[in-house]
Image (cartoon, rainbow, N blue to C red):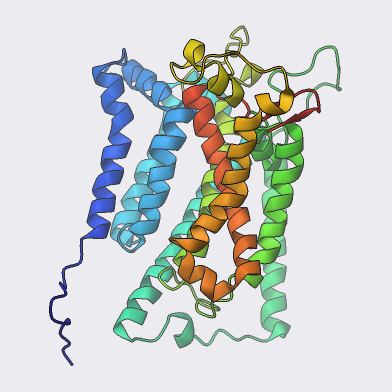
Length: 412
């Protein structure tokens, strides 16, 4: 049955997906064009120039801001297109050739990738990529079936099996295969054991286990109480409260994106961009003195990290001497007055922004969820957003702390 729009109302809908795609392409091209035209980076016309070009683009302020995050957004918006096998398989082949082929052209890259304790990270990358593709592909098919009124993939399967003997036999086979793999692994790869701990000569760099590298990367941008206590606690409470905040009955028992895009986008952004990518940074790109090195750059322990970190209070009160804006009157002696701009910004961002969201772009969600559940979700949401914000400000403005109170041993 055909429907007509009310008189005087246009039926035109802007091509949002096309506009988003064009904006992402332009955004990702900014650092490349800038570095080639205005910088000293040569075009990658040879292997050496290609390695130099890649090293310069791998710095976190460029790679995370202009590549990983836009690629994640593009992958979420265009999941129906890139998950098609005709597109996903060539992308996987190109990535695999680049990932392992780089071991042939560069000894530094080979030395990092061949470390026994880095082998599981490579397995994690490919495993995460494959499982993400598989889940998004199922969601794409289901969303298309929902749009056309067809049955879901999960609804057409009768996958019920008996515990005995089907499930028990399957588990037994998996145990045997996993045990064989571990035995072969222990024979082929030597255990990455180091010398006994010596406080007079700690290893450089000193890295946490891979599952804590995300937290160790957070320590670059936050104090230990924030990166090691508050943020992990927020992750745990957010995961606990997620089922109680997201009461949408759709999507239970089957893959979908279109029926609950907000919660899936936030969960995947927190996991992929703010966790997996940080593990990759800490494993492959953080070297001596916790400096950031490109994938083809030798790790030089003599390079010291730059110590040009500035606090928000410095920008506000001494702006004329540091950034060209601000009062230029010098830091007040009173610590509360000195840090008042950072306190106001932090309170407004963490508690004022959720109220603003409830009254504007998330008003419908606020009415559906109620005040308690919405503000619980919104506070976790904005604090999660504080991390990439702090990272970008650190890279662009060398901003160290929003609030700097050494008198109370409190820094944020």
